[in-house]
Structures are given as C-alpha cells and as structure tokens.
Image (cartoon, rainbow, N blue to C red; front, side):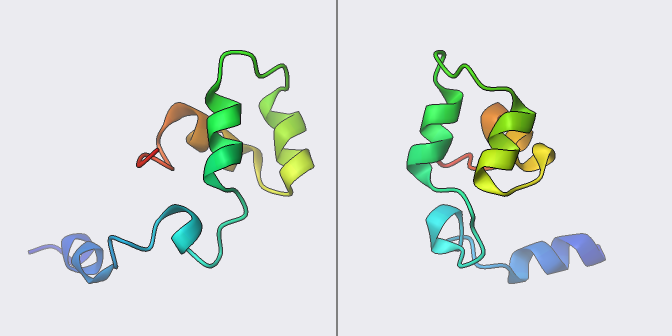
Length: 68
C-alpha cells in the first residue's frame, strides 16, 4: 500500500463541509455559488468570503464540497 493510500485511510470521512472546524464556507454559500444565477466572478467571491480563488473554483466545480 502506498504512503498516500495509508494517509487517506487515516482521515475521518465524516469531517467534511461544515463539520470541518477550519471551513470558511458553508453549504448555503456553496449552493448559492453553484446556482446558475450567481453574477459574481471567482475572484469577487474569494474576496467576499476571505478565501483563495482556487477554493471558490473547487467548490463551484464540485472538486471540493462534493457531498452537496
């Protein structure tokens, strides 16, 4: 088994989304961002919520916050 697979298995699978104490977004924000009527760019949303642009891109694309 590779190192990465071992480290992945140690993670708590239920510590996602708002259950992660380091989360700066919540399910309502992610759902709003994914809606078709979101008029803001990723950069504007990142500044608004105090996160990196990639955090917004990943949430909007479903790479992160998959459980929603």
